[in-house]
Length: 370
Image 1 (cartoon, rainbow, N blue to C red):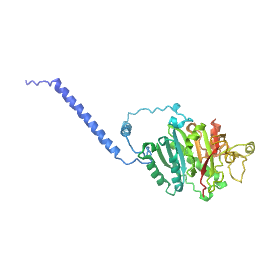
Image 2: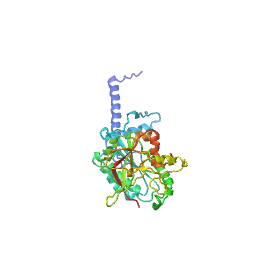
Image 3: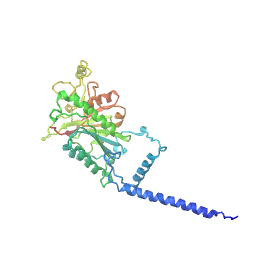
């Protein structure tokens, strides 16, 4: 019989140690290769989950690798826990680092985009706390390509403090075509506003995230407002607030633009009692006078932040605490208390107990559309 000597414990331990070392080295090499390819990738698609953000740090690369790996495990993963009780919208939002979501629905807007982005970029609110999202509908011009170009610029600046948190571009066609010269025709307003409401609701549900404290509805053709307007409006500390939007004129004369900001009066309330429930009321049209008190007709000398309660609002520049939308106040495409879209939103918010206010002395300007 041939006897074979059993290997010593020292030899066995050495083999095991070498195996561990080999596995460790392979793991490190795999991570380095993964990081190399991750950092060398071109910016992600603007339509993807990251909305065009480039991976810029090692921690981001590790996070991407970890999230990708976790998705591949059929039996793995952890629950996502978010305490919405901690989410607030305060009068001191800038100091509290509260996120703002700017929402703008668009259609054939290429001529307005340069000024739009110029004004947004002048805002003194921290860029890393700002998300901008667009919904482009039924567009035939270069709106989408311009948006992609500007998004790439704003998201990949060298200075971190000048980079925006996120920019998202959504596209949803409603196959609604209306000649520009008929855009403000009285008879077509209920139908046009109904499609606008659908557009806003699509954009809101697509873009609102759990970390957003504020939602700003901003028209693409607003051409003048203060750099500190976000902080100013936030300091009023109400659920919904709008500045007074006037028409931009060459001589600086006072011409009201956004007539959807208004208060009900005794006469307007009495008049509505005899209306068909499906009748949509519109402001600024001689065809049907509502007898409401428009904010563009209110005194403007009492101070920029002097607020008045409103019953209807437009959306040229409307700041909303995100909680208002989260609890269900959106833009009705149907008739709600004789209103649709933005004015219907104000009526809905008030019916839910939220406060809606305007600032007659805080002036912004809208371009004169063709």
